[in-house]
Image (cartoon, rainbow, N blue to C red; front, side):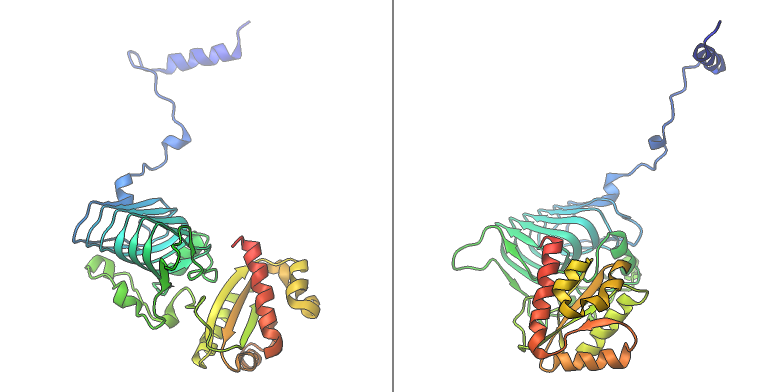
Length: 350
């Protein structure tokens, strides 16, 4: 009695063309489009303006190395980006899902967004940054930071594709692994620094097709003051709960408050549990517990004399019917801010 498998092998053998070799087996991974590493790097360039348009990187890793006097624009999201041995370059990087690592670079000016940011063996960098975790510098000097301030139509979707929140930005909370006693290896750029004066828009026809704006009120990432000294001893905490219009409402509230002369200090998007709400919202927590299951909350800290009253007025006038947490008074507001952001930093491991 024959074996099924032996009959199958016989049939396969008979189906082979005479005098021909056995056809190689095809696997699913053989069908994938081959990636050319040269499409995902800029290397050894001098005095050039180069870039990648939206859709041309699509989440791949990217490498920039040995470039001098170049303007480099990556208008797409990527996995990780390493920048090595570059001098006197202007660099824009769209959202990076993982890390951006500068090594042995000098005299470069950059705008970028990422999950992790690290600088080692560099000097004289200016970085307009959006970073979800604490930025780190090591063995580096004269590194200056500002808040990310950039817009083009595809950028919001690229943030989502990279898994980054526009509200999680610790751009000014720098950790120096190698501090020098009596010296500061990093500083913050002037608050009135004009992004375009540091990172100019591209000039080639191909890259000019990306409709870029560096105006603060159009920036995808809300422009915050970070750890700059506050102008007032009065702050106000606002927490927006997940819903169809949460991001739009947060943006509208920021625009209204900034338009009235208040300052946005910091923002955060984070998930909360019932016990977290009890600690942060106190006796008001029961009002918000049913909303926590809908998704993460967005928190905003505003600063300025009269911030609490000003925020309450705007929320009541514009967002009447939308449930939000707003600090009740100047006396309790600083405690609200500390409670929420202490919880958020622990939650996010910052």
